[in-house]
Amino acid sequence: MDVQWMLSRRQFVGTLGVGAAGATVLGCLPAAPMPLPPSEMTSDINLRLLNRITFGPKTEDIARINEIGYEAFLEEQLSPETMDDGEAEGRLFFLGSLNADPQGLAGRNANVVAGELIAATTIRAVYSKRQLFERMVEFWTDHFSINQSAGNELRYLKTIDDREVIRTHALGYFRELLRASAKSPAMLLYLDNNSNVAGAPNENYAREAMELHTLSVNGNYTQQDVEELSRALTGWTVVEEGRDRGRFIFRPENHDDGPKQILDLSLPAGGGIGDGELALDYLARHPSTASFIATKLVQRFISENAPDGLVSEVAKAFSDSDGDIRATLRVLLSQSAMAQAGPKFKRPFHLYVDALRRVGADLRIVPRLARSMEIMGQVPFQWPAPNGYPDVATYWAPGLLSRWNFATNYSDGRLPEARIDPRQIADVNGVADPEGVVALWDQMFFGSEMPDGLRQALLDYINEAPNDNRRKFAESFALAMSSPEFQWY
Image (tube, rainbow, N blue to C red):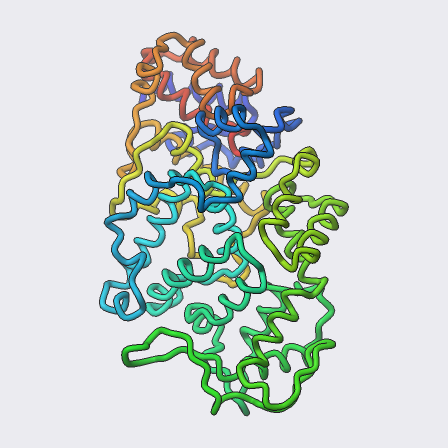
């Protein structure tokens, strides 16, 4: 790469007030500040919804919502079982571990099983028409976070947890999701409830069930409540050997069958497995849980600074529907709620999937498929703590350099799992001049709402950089993807 071009790109960096995709070769550039969010959100309410419930709107998504309208499109997304998702499912055909039972998984290489789940999650996010469902799978995966890399058993069992807990209940009832998670062998092992027995209770899962899964740290429970919940869950464990290895089992001989008091829930003696089930149902229906879940949903889909009034509306919908997730989402994603949307910073997985969706990239299953996500700091199922990947801009903003490098590698065709050629994309769309190319990137990356300043900066770059136009078209693709505006949705 010649010095003249490096200087031109450095000038482009200065024009935008933040780094750009050439940071790989410009190691001397100072660390970039956090990119400022857009000064205003799009006034197109349809585009707002698409930006929130997809991993990046494709042109066909925009055409679909404009054809049938906001409400009909939302209802379509809330009924994923009615949608043909053949393309996404067809791409999963060779991932043989996805539907295996615990015994079948145990005979496979643990790293291969873990890698296939990551690949499947990425494929579904990129290609599934059921985008809101996939976004909710991501939400609950964070909420009931399990670090897949914490041991070989978890590399196997997280696949079952993803299939039978998260995906089965992502749009169902919260109490059923909570119960399924509590009985998930992956969760039982990850948070040590498999060793929770009468006389020597392990409080780890009980504490996280209250703090992270239901009431929240502000839920007004006490250490005594944690201890009582752990007693209610004694005997909930995992079969460790034999044909049923890796399955949930309740062992009554290990259960503390005495009376228990959890907040204002009284459990009489002799309840057996029902102690834990009644306690979880009670926590699922608690007002603090409704408020906590509502706050997290509003922060994920509407604004990091969740408006109090909207949180109250969503919490009421959650409580009134007995934790019906679809009914809750109808309020959360209503037009009046979407009017309150504030800029959200894309997490690395979101950015990666968005970049592939926008241009219709062909994602292939290759070794180290998750390498780019790993460098940017977010591989599915790899967060080391049980609280899930952060959803705040301040956590992710310092990683801009890795994002620019990803954009450069992507535009240069150096991603082995998704090779593209922006120059060929321009040719296929019949554009060969700078204005047409920038308009194409505008349509793909910004839904034809690229800010004027960015449009002019890209045009100036193409017109003034010394390389030939075809090379500059590829570079402008990476620069558009690296722009501050594309980091937000």
